Image 1: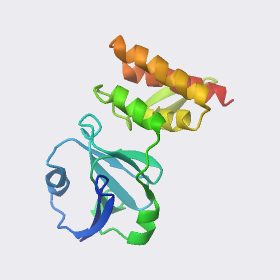
Image 2: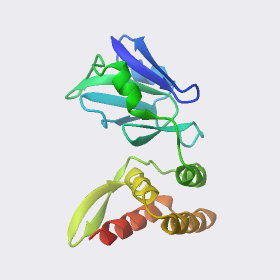
Image 3: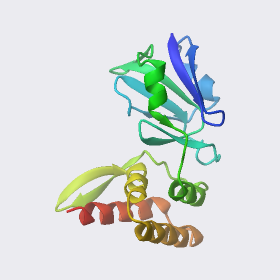
Length: 181
C-alpha cells in the first residue's frame, strides 16, 4: 500500500510501500504513543507523540506544526488506506522552515508534558470553544513582535516557576479569542 514518509532532518519526502497490520504505525515509530492529524483531506498524518519532548526537528505540514518523522496514509472514515495525494502536491504542503518564535517557544516547552494537539475549552461570550495549544502558537505567531515577546516572556516565567504550561496556553487562548471580538 502506498504511503509517504517525511524526514525533516534530510528534508525528504518519500513514497513507500507498506503493509497495513494492527501494529504497522507503532512499528514505524518504534513507539506506542502516536499522534494523528487529519489536517490533509482524506488523509491521516501519524507522528511520534514524544517527538517534541525528544527535541525532534519541527516542520509544517498542511500549515500544522509537526515533529520528527511522519507517516502519511489515506483515510476513509476510520480506516487507513493507500495515500491518494500526488507526491508533488504533498511536497508543496511541507515547509521545513520554522521561525524563531516557534523555535523559542518549542525550546521552552519541550520538557513539559504538554500535547500541542489536545483540545481544551475556552469561553467566549458564554460559549465554549474547543482550541489547542497548536492553535495558540499559530495565533501568536501571526501577532506583532511585541505581542510575541510578551508571550515568550510570560511563558518563561511559567516554565521557571514550574507551573502548568497547559494552563498558560488556555489563558493565552482566552486572551487571543476575546481580543478578536
